[in-house]
Image: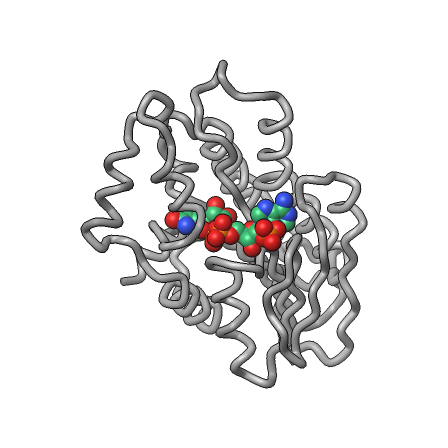
Length: 247
Ligand SMILES: NC(=O)c1ccc[n+]([C@@H]2O[C@H](COP(=O)([O-])OP(=O)(O)OC[C@H]3O[C@@H](n4cnc5c(N)ncnc54)[C@H](OP(=O)(O)O)[C@@H]3O)[C@@H](O)[C@H]2O)c1
């Protein structure tokens, strides 16, 4: 069996990812979010609020004796309130960093600890964003948490390469990690972006025009592209990339 732990499976990209994977009876999906919207015999839901540090720390990974592949897909994420720094509230800042950066870091650490000696294909896929590469006003916490997620992924990748080259680490069975941005996708996140106020976000009209001009990708299309990449890991260009790099 192939096991996929996916955060944020209740809607958007994460749900499309899970729906697509569940078409193959060799796949089992463990979804983590606050709401459950998937019913399937190969699906288990873990109700968790990934802004709650204690709840994140208590997430458990099972040892899957029959696993051929085990994946962690850190997909859950949110923009939070779109406002310039100075107009944010402390609680939103803390919750947003927790969801977008602390949760994937803690889950990745637990995932690697759990499957260190498991001998199968082990992959961590972080759903990153172009916003982690260039500043967008009103999105300070989102941009910096996604930049942090990219750097976290690069460090884990470097660690895995160093360990795999060390003859003293004979029991080490390596993990692959990728941080791949999805482009602009037609989900609730984009609805929130389009409803921001012009005074808080200078580019709101750009995002309205992406929808008017049909420039948004559908979650099902994007998740299918991710799955194709996951089936051909050798085609992935680097730790950091965008789904658009493979069109
Ligand atoms: N859409 C885009 O254009 C775009 C562009 C670049 C990057 N991304 C990234 O793609 C990923 C998915 O985004 P999306 O557009 O699919 O967003 P979405 O439609 O808003 O879905 C977000 C998912 O994350 C979960 N989530 C949010 N807050 C959570 C919390 N506190 N605890 C647990 N789960 C939580 C939600 O589940 P619950 O509400 O049920 O908890 C939902 O399943 C995010 O990391 C986002 O940053 C999206």
